Image 1 (cartoon, rainbow, N blue to C red):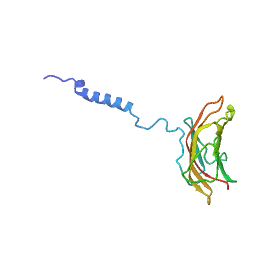
Image 2: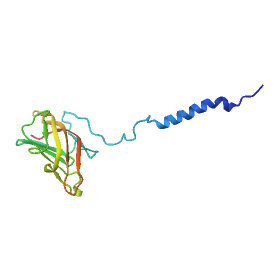
Image 3: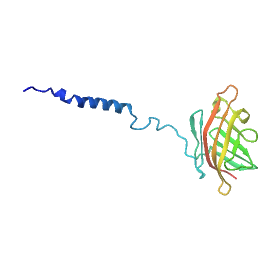
Image 4: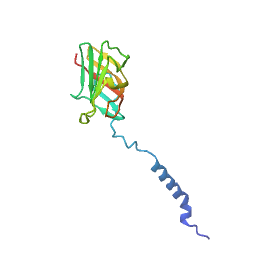
Length: 169
């Protein structure tokens, strides 16, 4: 009787193990490596004191801090944090697109150490949309984005801006 080589009978098993290992190595079974990367908060309308945006793709999230400002007095609202401050004159309406030119203004000071200061005159596009203006509970919420430039500094693109703040009347 002829003896069969043990390796030959197990060869299909070894091939299966090899290809399974290759397959598992190439898959992202356990999530993204960037799970710890900063993320923007969800848009809310509860007065959660959130103010967040991306500056040229980098997330800035200034939430529940004394570095936030929201004041609604004397026919205008001023709000902001993280070096971005926006001023818009009355009348304020929900779901209206306020262009950040003319009566609306903002300034960006993302890195004071560099000495770059951007003002609304430097803007070439941008808007704010209020999704909630609660004059009883003093809450203002919405979204914003804009692009700006100034001499001798990098162009700034602010995107995916969200805010949900309690304001001072």
